[in-house]
Every structure is written in C-alpha cells, then in structure tokens.
Length: 291
Image 1: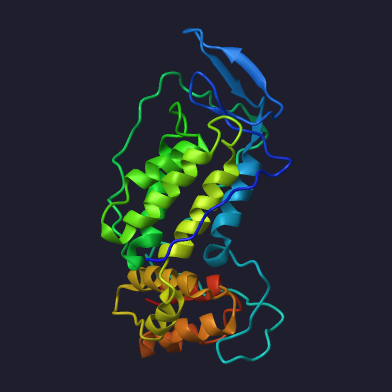
Image 2: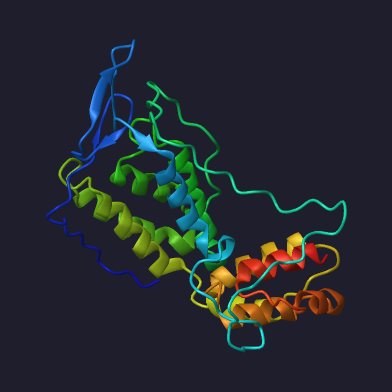
C-alpha cells in the first residue's frame, strides 16, 4: 500500500482547544461563566435564539426537504409557469403531510453542560479498509463523538484522531494507521491541538479509503430505482439517498425526470396532471397524495 508523509500547518487565526472541567472546549469566544454546585466552572453563551437553530436545521436539510433553489420546471424540461398552484389536497379521510414546527419566539437560555459526564453509546464498528464502508464508518465516528462532546477529552482534535485510529484494524489499514500514529506523535499535545488536526485527518482518510466510484455507481442505481406500490415512502427515501450520493441538485431537471421515471404509470399520470409541480418538494408531495 502506498503511503505518503503527512504534515500540518497551524493557521494563524486558530487557537488550541482547551478542556474545561466538564470536558467542554474553549477557543476564546465571548461567553459568560458560572459555577455549578459541585464547584465545576461552566461556560456558555448568554442566550440563543430558536430562529437561529431552526435556520441551521433548514440549511442542513434544504436540498430535498424545502423548495428553495429556484424553480426548475416540469419533468419534460419546459419552462416553469408563473406558479405551481394548489396540489389538489388529499383523498377524503387521508392524513396530510405533517405541518412544519414553527420556531419558538424570542431568546432561550442554552442548556448548561453537565459536569462529570460519562461516555455514552456504543463504539462504531471496526473499519478494516473496505472502501464501500468508509463513508458510513466516518459518519458513525462523528456520531459517537457528537454524542460524547461533553465528556472530558472528547473535544480534543488529537484525541479524536487517536480514537478513530483504534477503530481501524487489519492488513489493509495497518500501514496507513501506523503513519498517522507517527504523525500524531510529532504534534505538540497543547500547541498543535487545533481543529485543523481533525479536519486534515478526515481529508486524508477519505483520500485513502473513500470509494472513488461511489458517485458513478449511485447514478447507475438511481436510473433503475423504481417504486413498488404502495411503498412511496421507501421509494422516496431510497431515491433521495442515491441522489445525494450522485451529487444531483434537488431542483434540477434530471431529478424531476429520474423521480417520475420510477413511478408506476397510474401515479405518474396523476402527478403530471395540471397544475404541474414546479419544485422537487412539490413533486414529491403530489406523488404522496396520489398514492
């Protein structure tokens, strides 16, 4: 297996991560401090807004769950009309899609970090070098670290890398993990303990193990993705997963055409009746209401 030397440069505006008594990381941001009954210092911002939380959630899910991104026109590639109009509603007695949860009004106090938190959840499965499993492995690692970000040490970029390396075993990863361990040994545990350590590790991991044909394979699979009546939810979940991997924009003409291509003829006929959906989200809603 080919290996390469790995170097790290500390950005001039990056500060080392320091660990508080409750495991929280600090990078010099403005904050207010308080003391818990146990004598541990807790640091937090003074207030947060529900609107900010809501907007970040929408941004994370916007590609396939909100109209956004402009109109792409109907599946046939024609120009978009002045508006998509109504979708005709649900059949009598059928439940409609769940209404969005409105963000709470005004500011809310952030929840203080708990003191002396123990690690929770199970460790991700061991990664042995299978490129088809590389992305899922890293997402599992991120999820585990996210769950335990309040635990002392888990917010340290160097320890994040060290933990991940312990979850990689086998002949296909041995040389690479050895090189990464050597790299960690060259870092100053205080001055070099910066977020860029974790970012560079993730970049090198994906460079080494990510499936280079994943996107092309997803494009082939989405062409063959079809709905088995009446499992519209399963079809949408599978379709959107493949579309994300393939790199398709949610409101592109290609997504419209591929989605309608996989629908049964009777549902397709209903979906394409006037008014024609002008966004992927509207197209999806109409398909659900037609099932």
